Length: 128
Image 1 (tube, rainbow, N blue to C red):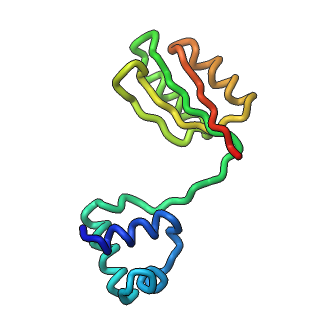
Image 2 (tube, rainbow, N blue to C red; image 1 turned 90 degrees about the vertical axis):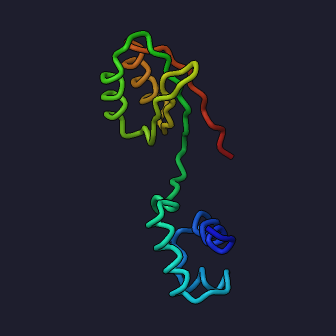
């Protein structure tokens, strides 16, 4: 991966809807040359996927500290809540870190259910 690849990736991270031609104009390559570079970056697993960022009203970072070894139950519950955008099983003091976008009411519901198997801490992002 060279400097042009890094520049293309940075531009795509800012706006993944840019066409190859638009990217080419910014990095001084043809649209076809940019397209070939993007294909190579995908094939080499440098670019994993293209996505969008949703402007959620609420974002919570939830750490779960397991009281039991019921990991499969916890993961089943986590997967039932559409407000959870991602979670990871982690090492350290917490067992899971969850990124979610709950309303206050739905967060309370989630916490009530999850409390049977885990302790938790919730940090809420402050949006401007």
